[in-house]
Image (cartoon, rainbow, N blue to C red; front, side):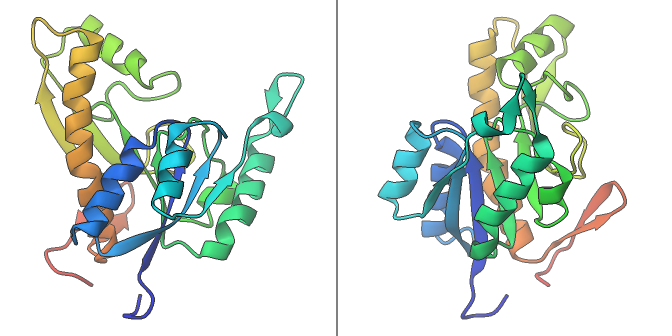
Length: 217
């Protein structure tokens, strides 16, 4: 990264774009030394697309339909098409922001990619654990603490090296909605933090762990 070439970020989304807006606000506030250069959505008519365009961010749409035959989704073909869309923007980092498609190796081996999960991994992660399904499982298990986790994506559901976590209490009166609100507030704090740490060159992967340095690279 040089002074003339800011840290480039591509955001992948499928919904309202709340996470993208949060990151953009942190960038505009000088808290993330980077720039969102592209948004890719798996759905055309979602609020996240409209919000990205309002910020003047280039938007690409890559739906799942043409990669699905006989109800079978071709993840590798989708990933290869996604590589073609993203490569011209040369992102230093790809941020999954409610992107409802698991990424396959053709994409993940080319781009450093991170995701946020609404629980304290490795608990309550894996296939089928997303959105309210996570919070319902947390409440059913009777645990006293939940939270949010930012991790590198590595092709396995919720198993990549962890960058940041924040715990939140699980209250006796919680419903999936009230717990989700508390966890989402934590996500809004730690996701920009993780992006900033990576942009500053302070995150190194050692096996299945990350090491966060005190100083910028």
